[in-house]
Amino acid sequence: MDKQLQQIRKDFPILNQKVNDEPLVYLDNAATSQKPNQVIDEVVRYYKNDNANTRRGVHTLGERATEEFETARQKVQQFINAKESREIIFTKGATDSLNLVASTYGEDNIAAGDEIVISIMEHHSNLIPWQQLANRKKAILKYIGLTADGQLDMEDAKKKITDKTKIVSITHASNVLGVTNDIKQLAQIAHAHKAIMVADGAQAVPHMPVDVQDLNVDFYAFSGHKMLAPMGIGVLYGKADLLKVMSPYQYGGEMIDFVEKYQSTWTDIPWKFEAGTQNVSGAVGLGKAIDYLSSIGMENVENYEKDLVAYVLPKLLEIDGLTVYGPHDADHHSGVISFNLQNLHPHDVATALDMDGVAIRAGHHCAQPLMKYLNLVATARASFYIYNNKQDADELIQAICDTKEFFKV
Amino acid sequence: MSLNGLNSLYREVILDHSEHPHHKQSLSSATNKITLKNPTCGDVINLEIKLDGDKITDIGFTGEGCTISQSSASMMTDAVLNKTTAESLEMAHIFSDMVMGKEHSQADLDKLGDAAILSSIMQFPARIKCATLCWWALRKSLGDEDDD
Ligand SMILES: Cc1ncc(COP(=O)(O)O)c(C=O)c1O
Image 1 (cartoon, chains in turn red, yellow):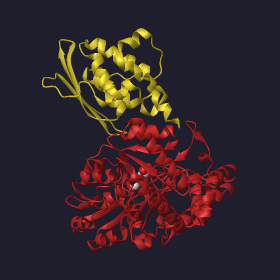
Image 2 (tube, chains in turn blue, cyan):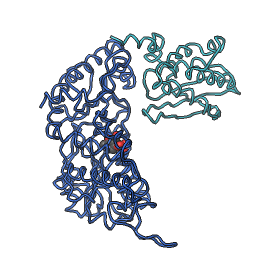
Image 3 (cartoon, chains in turn red, blue):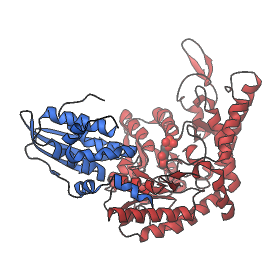
Image 4 (spheres, chains in turn green, cyan):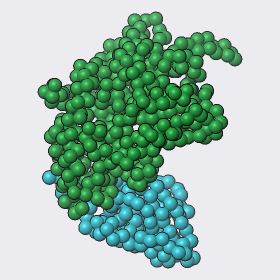
């Protein structure tokens, strides 16, 4: 298995370059992943051979494009084990998916005094839509806190979720703390109080097997671009019973049944939620990315990354003056590793690492409430994916040591 | 090891200013106050100015930021202290032109004092905002809002 993963680097042409005269070590995968030739070629193939608008024409290309779009939907369905393909809605990405839920299900079902429960570790895209919904409706937004080692506090979750709670929306995997949350248990708690469970899977689906029926979530959001697919395509999974009765998200072409001058009726799910021309090439690329990941196997992806974390995390923890956020035990830490080096600002760290060819992220990672909760302004963050290897981990460690030396921290 | 490239950005003067920033304190008798944030990284600067007529007779800053933003603020306070608002705003424009790589005369650069050394930031486009945040704060607190 390792051997197969050793070889996949050659599928990613972008990795084969120098940055600031050093070989590129790409460790910003939590922001976006790189794309393999297979996905890039598939998008090119689609545009060279089959491009047309979907569900409009009767001509052959139109049929092909429609079929490929719907095939991609089925691939997504199988990949996350949804019951039916009409439970898969294509969106622009996780942000768009979460906004869809807040402005349709949320708008339809939240009233003054109702509670919406999220956690303090949420990305802004799973925070602001709920915050604004709560403000619009005079509903109450509640935050689940963290345990001392940065995991979601499940005891606090049990207290915060009450009979007044209508929606619980939690990230499946954190983009800062490197923790994975027990969505299945959270869904049980939410359902026991007759609330619905929404999960933000942006950092989970690329890295581990996800089964939405097993998790028993009502909605699940993720982005294609973090899982080898093009930017601008994402997914919202929703249970068919809920989707059927929800208001549309946007209005326009392709989402209608009949339109009269003063009234309209909506077409069936999932198309009811897909107004206007869709990102067909993105969906086709996502389908190919799913084929690519499936051929490796998501268990293998997960185990490979676990091995990498088990290798690099102890080395990072050994560096004098370096603080790692989230659990220090590699078994409970994903390939997203946030850290700070003494009191050196993470921007300075990221610029220094970039001079060594190592690409990491620095900043608040779109999680300002979390930063405030942790009493931090910002952190540096290295995040790994399947094409990274132990050599990349060594380069990271070396670059951090060089940085320490340069700034004498 | 290519960290040597860092020397062009993190010169001794810049590191000195960030380790021992000048005028990093809040003023008891400020006439103009402003807080600016860099939303992409969360850096914050609180700039306080004491104006006597149109002359900056005292200046101080507090807040959080990287080496570049801290040293830039330190060098800026040195540069504009005891200058008129017109002179300070002229410096702010020269600084902004300089980091954007626009032409500037040596005489203009000399007006900036130590701050001129930050022209090297041009080679690090991702960091230009770190250097300009304090100058934006200065312009805003002196009522100069036009974009350029
Ligand atoms: C946990 C989490 N949720 C949501 C998002 C938003 O994803 P996108 O920007 O692709 O919509 C991200 C991306 O950074 C993320 O890390």
